[in-house]
Image 1 (cartoon, rainbow, N blue to C red):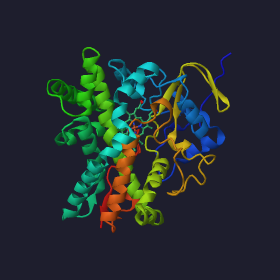
Image 2: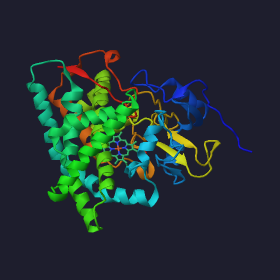
Image 3: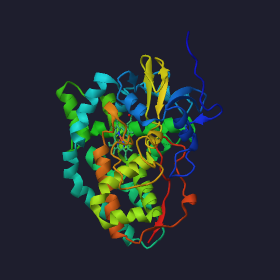
Image 4: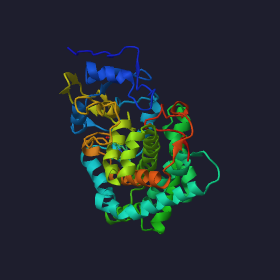
Length: 408
Ligand code: HEM
């Protein structure tokens, strides 16, 4: 007989929007306290397992019996609109949606571009980029300025453009398409159109690189595929889109939120100002504290799996709540507190297991350089609006701030 498990919090749809930017929704806390793996109802009515315990989250993300394939019927779809799942069925899925050997092959093809050694070599250029945008901020007569537009978005966008071989002059176009794609409150057809437009833009760019290669990741991908036969255009576009989107949007959100948290916790900010040697640990704690990729880490069980006192059945969808796992008191003492000195390295803000973030070394270097440089060069930086007035991305798979007015 099949056991039917119903929603642990009936009447509540998931994911729940964050109220305070510094806290997890209290529904998440309640679920974790009751059951680290519970059934919930998603917006749109589908049910899925909600994983909020740190141990269970890591176990699932490391377990090959859970698939990342977004084309599967029960892959959690918090938007509730079936067109998103359909869209993935018509083209090669992005790396993050592949399993097993197919996933390993695509990941391997770009891995050497993101090693810690490669990123260490990029440090001087990233420093130069950060200094350049801060020079522009300081030279501007108008204040307050919006940190999102002056620093948070430009830095990772220019860095990823140079790595991939995307002309930075097109930044307004790809940034706006990305923003439209992931805004859950926008009509689905608008989001899908933005996705198609971004892919068409990249297909065109890649076609030009086939005849005029540059010294960049996209050109090296084309060359690699030529060595193995003819370039697979659809695969190239799919990987290219994933890298461009993930490479700027996530880090941009972390820059804004990190600056906000540091300004709101002056005692903690003093630790970074006193010694930049503290920044690497501080970045780990900020990543844990915000866990911006909140519900995009989903899976589908490929067989029955017992975990956290329940049986997740084959074909059932699972959402791993990184935000909740990273606030599990069994692993992080006083998890609601921002403590830059805590060793938070075992957080799962970059995921865990075979899909653990490919760009994590890049994100870390960017965040460390931005926080060190910004507060050193503009020591009087302060918020120009109360936190309550800042518009947050409460309805997107990646949390962040739409605007962050600052002055000095
Ligand atoms: C603070 C910034 C970032 C955060 C919080 C973040 C978070 C994540 C998370 C949670 C995953 C795992 C998804 C899963 O398991 O389903 C992931 C995967 C990924 N990230 Fe990031 N990311 C960041 C920056 C970047 C950057 C800068 C890049 C650069 C290209 C990038 C590229 C990727 C790719 C390609 C994957 C898929 C890896 C795979 O499937 O093997 N990310 N990221």
